[in-house]
Length: 377
Image (tube, rainbow, N blue to C red):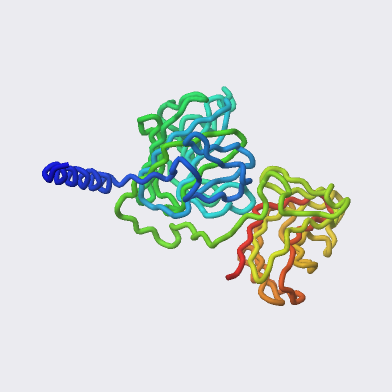
């Protein structure tokens, strides 16, 4: 290569690199693996990569999210359902872990629903063409017609399974706009949160995702109240598919079952135990105790519990309702809190490691979900 040709090549390459930088698009999926993504609450086989696309089995119900937060951006991607009537979604400005008592991330959800889900006469509260709506604590004002805080699209533009659909999501300063296959159709204003993670939803049906890219936009001044809490290193202990990582002795094993995103206990006081956990740690667990049987009052000592190395910690939330508990273990002591209640202190025997056990109640079936662990450094 002569000197002039070399100079021209360098200038051309530099211009191309500069154009790419100025364009600002960044791929969120490298086509090879799930680097940059976090499996929030699904099995290791739920999300995968095949032939350059992200694959999802649809089981269990849950999410896959980005490692980092975003505030102002343009997100483009393609999706398709592999079965007619499939259901999924995109979580925008989401939480890092599932919201209390559900498998979904708190967020503004952009619906990803196949047209086969459409049942004439039964779909007055939704469409299959790009609804946008807040879920599980988030809020949004729809830009036009809809159902409550749910914004319906102005046109029906989604393609049937197994065709690919293209979404373009523009999110800026608490506003969100969705374009389906090249035309804007729905959105909302005054969103809270307006800064958070981005996620893909697993909800019962196999899906594929590809060409996921983002262009961050300037500006952004989300307050603390408008921003999702940062990822604090929580790791799921239950995969939504089976009891891997848990054990119950003898007949007790028959009382426990994996039921999608919920761990079900059929009744009794059988304990399901995790593998031993070393050192200090924090635990999140959601629990829904059964309502007392008609004419019977619940015994004071028959509440569901978390069992820490043999020490029982009662979960005293309202019967029939989901409650989130945060348990902190430090040395020979622990504390448990839920909601705005003051933390309750518990003495524990000194131990270098402890199993984490879940225990139901003789009153009837107890449901557990969203079991997350964070070990102290």
